[in-house]
Length: 145
Image (cartoon, rainbow, N blue to C red; front, side):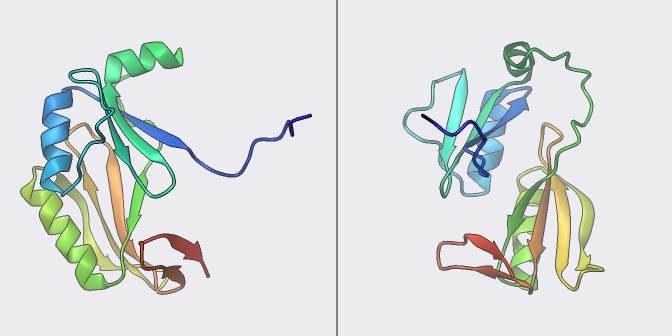
């Protein structure tokens, strides 16, 4: 009999976007490549390390999820950990060059790291962080402590 508890993992994160083509151009400018199983003009999938990120029309995502889209921030921030403060600066510069708004410039943090935040073209905030207390393996996978 299968375990009825939910495993402690995330398999897929879907970001609702206003314009899929524009969102694909933005993430492409950051060096991301959509997976071949993406569906033209409907949804784009990015194979990440152990899970998938999808871009899908915001109104379609809201309907599918059974929620009312108030158009505001949804209370979620994504994060991208890197190996150094210089890498934080480089990623934020690339995001700004691709059209992102830098909502918090990079700088030292109260927890001893270095981070900044960019907001993508659809309002999704991404923290880019170097946390010296967390380990990144060769593939960029993070582990706490």
